[in-house]
Picture 1 (cartoon, rainbow, N blue to C red):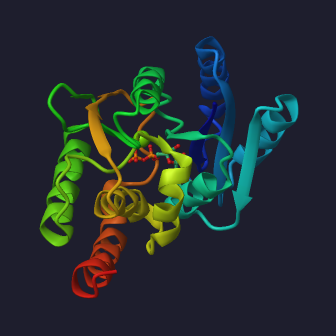
Picture 2 (cartoon, helix red, strand yellow):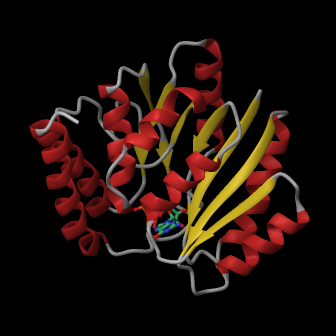
Amino acid sequence: MKVSVVIPVYNEARILPAAAAELTADLGETGWDYELLFAENGSTDGTTEILESLAHGDPRIRALHEGEPNYGRALRHGILEARGDLVICDEIDLCDGAFHRAAIEILLSGKADMVVGSKAAAGAHDERPAVRRAGTLVLNGLLRAALGYRGTDTHGLKAFSRERLLPVARACRVERDLFASEFVVRAYRMGVNVVEIPVSIREKRKPSVHLFRRVPNVLKNLARLFWVIRVKGG
Ligand SMILES: Nc1nc2c(ncn2[C@@H]2O[C@H](COP(=O)(O)OP(=O)(O)O)[C@@H](O)[C@H]2O)c(=O)[nH]1
Ligand SMILES: [Mg+2]
């Protein structure tokens, strides 16, 4: 059994070396046969060079690069390139080893094909600023209203069977921030057995892109998904 850990990264030069070292040390302790896949695009702060040198120095690390900054596109690219039987999606400011272990245990037990780490489920601890926590609730409310989503969170930590979720990743239509939501919403709609587990969120740094700058694109893609999924049934 091989595990792929996929992490989108963009302009993270400040925290990347330490976070990567901590993460590889922690993954080493799990005893898993793992690969660590960084999906970078558009960085201008030296992140690309750091990733190249990490990948050079450790055969378990791979770095993917593309031109324009695009979170969803990077995440999807990483998922499609992953070679593990099981895939974990994490973020460089989180690197949540407790989630990795809990999620892999659930997947191996056969209880689910996808585990979503929820920042809003009962038992979660979300130490992000109030405006970000509100953002999570608002986005989730919109996903419920527009797409009939039933869960409590879609953005962030996830783990899944690669074989089972590849068709879902391929079916997704939107990129940027809303891809992560489309991926989870489509997983439910395509009959994947999804479970949510509460997570504890403490970011290693402040979020890089201001929340309000993301809103127009999220709303545009939400309207697009409403059209594609709810109106056309695709
Ligand atoms: N490749 C790529 N990664 C990104 C982009 N924006 C954010 N990320 C990465 O996605 C993860 C979460 O980003 P963050 O700024 O903390 O946003 P949050 O989801 O609001 O917490 C981090 O690993 C970032 O480096 C992007 O445009 N491209
Ligand atoms: Mg973050």
